[in-house]
Length: 364
Image (cartoon, rainbow, N blue to C red; front, side, top):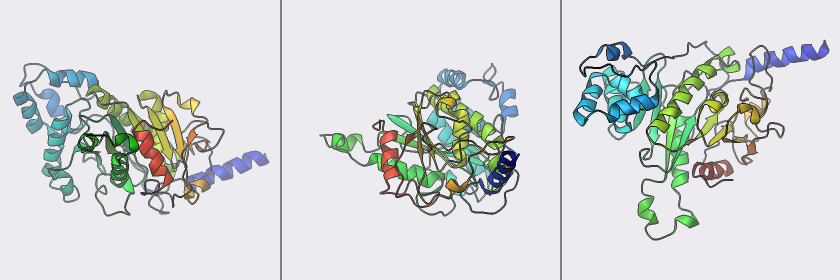
């Protein structure tokens, strides 16, 4: 009975503590944005091509890719103009079309919170204004990259706050930029004739993927797996879309609650590596229980408050075992010099150096 009582207390503490990066405010319950993108009804009704367009709700990314491969340039451009929100979010559609479609979709909202996303130099790979908004941005040349990494952030991230002023190297975009810069730094192997020109755009592309409804603050949303399960479905489809357009198997860098998303999605992706950092748990007792062929890594800094979150799982509350524990079986990423919960991508840290090596396929 005493053990059961301690477990209940621990679970209650987990509800009170587990959360994201925005502090200690109580969280508001969120409704997960799921399903096909806005505008799908009009897309399905479009008969301009004499045949049905691929249903965003049921067509696989490979089917989408085949459909676009059968169109000429004029047909593709017409679909971008007529259905920007669908094309911009349609996994398997050609990358340049998605960038242009999302530029148009962002501008069409007329919402000042999103205006900066429509700049011509941005590579916005997904944009969904529903709810608090979702966005994915590419850093680097995803079409020609030899390696691809995806940043999966935790709580308090959305399209509306994506370009908000933050501490450097934090937030999904800051983490992506830091990783992109770190992977572009020359190594001894790169110091060969012609290497500088070849590395001008870098061998690694990084996607900042705020493609799911994240928890807000600290509350039940951050302590249970409901939003993570919805996010995992979207992440799995997103990675299938990368595969459909010929991108390399991605490395998933999963921060805080984002590691819960990655834990649930891992078996449904073709990721080469899954890296959990500042993780409250991945909804699995061990790395083997993730049922993925990916290498699993974990990092936690000495001053990260996530260490105070109880690693429990009771009646759906809590996210289970600590990924940095020996019993979990993940490969450890050194993080002794990481400050706080969001400092893992700070230039000069051990963690960022290892992240860059993992992203380039050099870490074993």
